[in-house]
Amino acid sequence: MKKLVMGFGALLFAVSLSVAAPKARNFTGEIMDSQCAATGSHASMLKMSGMGEKDPNDPVAKKMCTQKCVQMGGKYVLYDAAEKAVYQLDDQDKAKEFAGQKVKVTGTYDEASKTIHITTIETAS
Image (cartoon, rainbow, N blue to C red):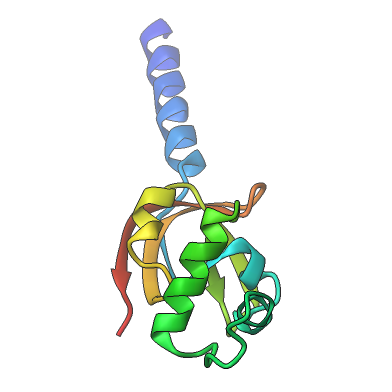
């Protein structure tokens, strides 16, 4: 009987771990800086920095703006334009390489902090 109870306890523990472990998901969007993601566009930051003539949809302008805003204290985030959602990213170094680009991020999502714990990032097609 004791072995049965211990075996059942171990089974419950294993099941609780598998239920509690978040599942990896795919997220798509643009790696932006937190300042521009708040408005969903680089336009106002480009204008404020004296580069209002630049097209905010130009890939070079997006990258430049994102990097500059992060240098000024922002964070790299994933902006999903379709959902108008901003996701914090736990690994800023992985995100840095993709500044201003459309990407697919795979990772687990922490709803409480709105943070994606990145497994991989790759350029979206």
